[in-house]
Amino acid sequence: DRRSSAGKARAAELAESGALVLAPDRLEQVRAWSGAIRAHPAARKLLELPGENELAALWPAENVYCKARIDRYGSGFILDLKTTAGGAGKREWQRAIDRYAYDLQAAMYVEGVRAITGTTPVFVWIIVEKDPPHDVAVYEADASVLASGTARYLRTLRMYAEGVRTGVWRGYS
Image (cartoon, rainbow, N blue to C red; front, side):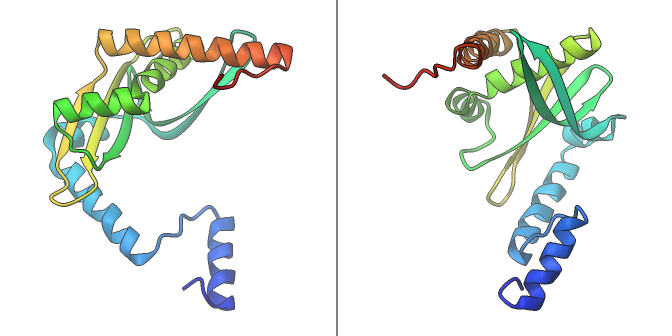
């Protein structure tokens, strides 16, 4: 309980040690998502492949540095875990890709791995619905998703690099 002095001190101590502190209701939600993902055969198989979790990546592009925090990276693949309130179906997921620029993220992460390793990984999303029954889906970012994402990524990267170079930052006007 972070309302008391002792609770605040304990939470700070845990956070300092690198522990993730969750409220009990949030912990139950995360456990439900985890159980649903582990019960999904394709998702479980992907997560059992050898790899590293929460991998930080940093690479140069357009005279600036890009960075990523990859959920799971292994030989030849990137896994990205997403929760959704809009449904895990193919049509709903495509709308989420468009709405939240997940194609840009996929393309950027693939390009980052390519820049660092010289190899081009497959990018796969594992989607879990936030609300029960916590349906799970697995989708690979296909060529068209990566092409649209690459266009968005490069446009955004170039605007950022221009801002860094000139000190002039484009707004909404």
